[in-house]
Amino acid sequence: MTDKTDFTLAELMIVAASEAWRGDGEVLASGLGVIPRLGASLAKLTHSEGLLMTDSEAFLVEEPIPLGPRGDYQPKYAGYMPFERVFECVWGGRRHAMVGPTQVDRWGQTNLSCVGDYAKPKSAMLGVRGLPGNSINHINSFFVPAHSKRVFVEGEVDMVSGVGFKPERWNEGERNDLMEIRIVVTDLCVMDFDGPSRAARVRSLHPGVSFGEVQEKTGFPLIAAPDMCETPHPTAAQLALIRRLDPHELRATAIKGNPPGIRPAA
Amino acid sequence: MDKRMTTADVVGALRDGMTIGFGGWGPRRKPMAIVREILRSPVKDLTVVAYGGPEVGMLCAAGKVRKLVFGFATLDAIPLEPYYRKAREAGELKELMELDEGMFQWGLRAAGMRLPFLPTRCGLATDVVKLNPELRTIRSPYEDGEVLIAMPALKLDVALLHVNVADRLGNTLVTGPDPYFDHLFARAADKCYVSAERVEERLLLDAATARSNTFERYLVTGVVEAPFGAHPTSCPSDYGWDMSHFKRYAASAGEEGGWQAYVDEFVAGGEAAYQEKNGGAERLAKLPLPVF
Image (cartoon, rainbow over all chains, first blue to last red):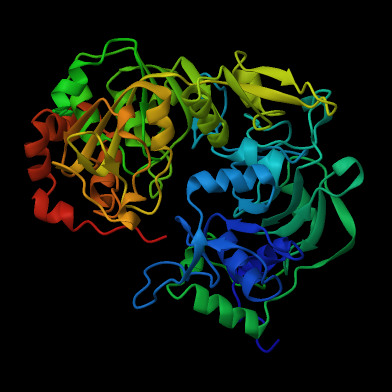
């Protein structure tokens, strides 16, 4: 590390997000949104070259495509992956997606449909989209750009769109062994659901963030992982790759205020 | 054999209370010229089945939706479909069947294969099952005994699609990179009407181009020539979606009398006027394809 402020929080989160796919081998890596997509791209270019990625439209690429207007850059295609094939991939389990749900609860259940009463919601959002199918069939990670109790709710999410580890939600005979929640990357920390009885844990804290602050902004109790540490800082090599993957600096708009990676302790 | 007709002919064949599937995906390749014709018509009480984009919002705003069968409604670049959102938050959409995207195509597939249902794991352990009590489960008759959702066939009275090229016989080509699920909508429907950027006399293609045909002409009841008929949604490889139009449309949802003003400006005058209001054919043809 040369200069303690030479990376942004977004860049720290991209590196943290890339760790989600480590060791996955040959699966379709889908990062939805700027930071998850850059995370998946970084994973493929560094520790997990076996990952499959698309051009975010209908084709597979072996070289992750930089974000935004492409100028002279011509994508090189290695295969075809229209929406129809994405479902075949999802149902076959060979995918790891990182998605940004509106709500996440203590059981890892997610909501993308609506906030408030279903019949007359306070806020109607996208709809469940592919969350029910993705969540029950393959590995998922979550991305939360603004860690708060509005996202990490106290009780159950308002509309369970993605499955989780709440036993009462599963009936006899239904297979819950094909799902996995890997990590949750937020602007404060990295979490998982690998505590006792799949309780939520903090795996690492971003620089300048305390466990107390994370707990205070989370609607359910958290456990500190035994090896909880500071989220690793991006290396110069990782930062160079991120710059190449995001030439228009879309990452600067991904987190409110684009704060530096190392924040003064609260 | 000549299946050519007009958007007015298509909408003339619709009846109140019908179940209508709309092809495309979100803000992509929606049969918007036909949707605008529906907006000009008295047809109502529709069950709308769609991977929802602006057609869902517009039909909601016009009060034509009795039931919505969907997995999402979005304009992508504007994530929340403004009029869908407005209708939902006002509690106006009383009948909803909110489905996982994959379950949705599974239901269309069942209908196309004349099956009562197809089994799937998707939707289990979520509120999709709780909020749709009509969804039943089924236990595998084999040793595994797994319990699955029996996704019922999504039978459509009518499917409405927009493609790049068609001929008078009902042969169609989708020249963009993704065919979406139009072929499943076509198979699930009793009648399927397809609008196209260009309708030719006969398609006489080379083998590579013929692969862009994604469903058979025996599924097609009628074809309508509707240049820029997907606007403001995209129609790859011909043109991209119209972001400035989407912004204007979305802004209207926040204005008093906004929907009526939108209808007066863009819908009431017909397609020729619509194109002129949007800068004319020259501008529309140049709308850039979105870059992801």
